[in-house]
Length: 535
Ligand SMILES: Cc1ncc(C[n+]2csc(CCOP(=O)(O)OP(=O)(O)O)c2C)c(N)n1
Image 1 (cartoon, rainbow, N blue to C red):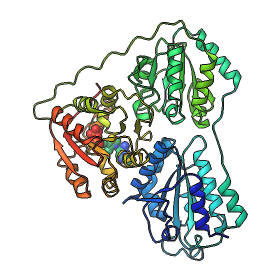
Image 2 (tube, rainbow, N blue to C red):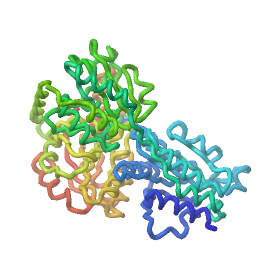
Image 3 (cartoon, rainbow, N blue to C red):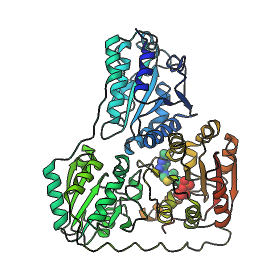
Image 4 (cartoon, protein in one colour):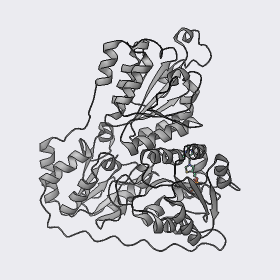
């Protein structure tokens, strides 16, 4: 007979979930008692950071990430990051402590009085087990649910007196032994139909989304594009947490704009649009127009039934993106169409006012010059998002993570989680000085656990993207868009991350060169001129 705690650690172990990100309180201590030696606890100083680290870790490790939070206020602090994890399709188990069962009805201090309702609608499943003995099975169910498509966060609230109770022998043994696999293959007649339509199309195009990478379909997407001579676009930069196609590949055309009218105009002339591993589409800002170019057909391949159902146009096949690409590849011949024209190089960096700082484009060009082949980018620098994608041309799988949900705070925290999952690859986190504030305590975890992320902070003393949105929305006179005298380098140093300030592209390049791959956390802050950088 084992205790609920022993059975739960056996369960987590059986799923390879031996890293726990957390911020503990009194209600979580009974779970952490006699913490097993083969587990690693990574302390985050605020729950948004805890969840963001677990999200990055889950995506980069291929396991279900685990974030352990402190009852109601801890879950509350983590909600924005749980929203991001849902948008990222990050498989995540979120657990939180709860008052002793005997204390709950009288609502003693720290009782989370409606724990399962709290993280709705951001989780796939939310639960508080009715009996202590059910805790291992409930956590098992949460792990399976998180890992089934669409992958995402689940939540279990656990009363603090449950951990020392006895686990029912057979129930927990069965829970620990269970395995669930959610990868589904497409129906053969759908593949035959799509293969035939691809062959017959005069100008088909592939639109690559994040779940190509997460499903392991990277090489299949490349092979399909090459065999069928497909030009390839990436989904809009703000709508996808990963890259689905090598951006230095000669078939790659660029990144689709995010508004309805502009997106359809960019695809004008194509008669068949095949979207793989993405929502169709995460539009923003609202610029109405036709959803598709004239007489174009669209077929989306997604493992997420909701993505399939909510798309405003086109057809959808609900199946694993990698398996579907593989099936399609086996069903199509080498096409006789012309090889797509190579993409033009982006224009050189624009001039900036003397003394104003370099352009975001120049900063990204400096990074591109020293970016290692096996480097991984975490990106949260809104006004330089497009500049980074244009200058770096990321071309290996698992090399780019971004918050598909758009909630700031993902970048710094997920960088720590990704680096812990991929200790042999250099992680570079490119972050705006405004964005850094939403997860600022992630610097402490990087320093305390010697997580060797290189943080590149772009300091432009404003919320540049919001000034750009003001113009787009015709808004004048909005307050709160300037950030004077925000010294991220000094703050990061206070948390223990060695930090340097540089000016100019050349000093940035040489500093990054010595920092990246140094094996230690470090921060480089560079002055960037105000504005949006689209080249
Ligand atoms: C949690 C959260 N709060 C607020 C916002 C709105 N927001 C989007 S971009 C942005 C400014 C980011 O500033 P900075 O990192 O300095 O980047 P810049 O726009 O200057 O490139 C803000 C506040 C958000 N996306 N997420």
